[in-house]
Image (cartoon, rainbow, N blue to C red):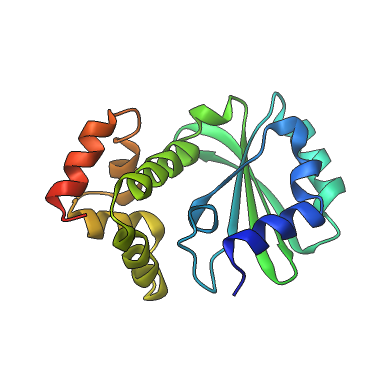
Length: 176
């Protein structure tokens, strides 16, 4: 299993971030949060002014990698391009939309989870890792740790933009 630092180095050495540079790539998800397990993928979120152009650029840059595929879908009501490929047998998922990265729901969920880990006790990160090793998805693991109910992605997303005091209260009442 690669460490957080090794994943960052791998992305850099293989030119993944450089190939996406014009799209403001942000590394998100469990590997960026350092809560990943052996089967975790690497998630990147990008901003583009043209999904068609993004499709062409990513095919040129990543089409040579194993299990390369692209798909245009609607995610939470907006057209979105998904690009998948494997780097050294490590799955990489790239997600792009035609608006700034900070407006992507996936980035917003990542930002909430990052803040929770920053504000919570050190045991929170290890508990999330443990739950992920047992098969739970990242958002569901946070929900479990925090004692929250509802649809995991949407519930975590609803915390985006809340003051740190609100997140601290949630952590306090959950024992973190």
